[in-house]
Image (cartoon, rainbow, N blue to C red; front, side, top):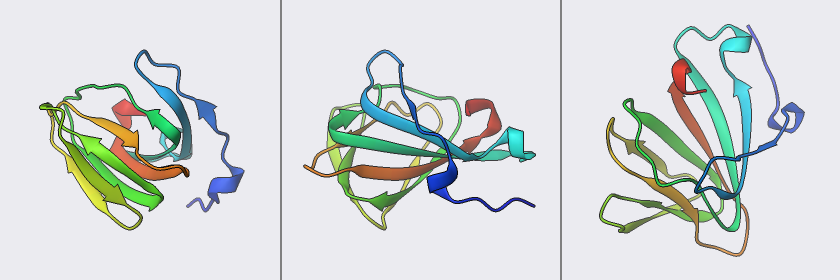
Length: 115
């Protein structure tokens, strides 16, 4: 069993090509003994965004704070706000963007291979 608080987890800048203004935290993952899924927390600064990318597995997301958008393959922005859940199917091209002047923060649960 493990209990942690997000303020106790290191924030690491995302340095992937196509990412801007994104911090990543890993409050629960393989280092904690999770056998199947990990919880990652991404914090996007105003105008920040993740890379426009594809995974071969699902992503389960929950917005902790702020307002942003999930961008689909056609470039359509699907608004997200605090309290929203989002599901990205395997093979679905996507990007997350902060569309506000405040921080946008979300949990992203993925199979451990994508920590």
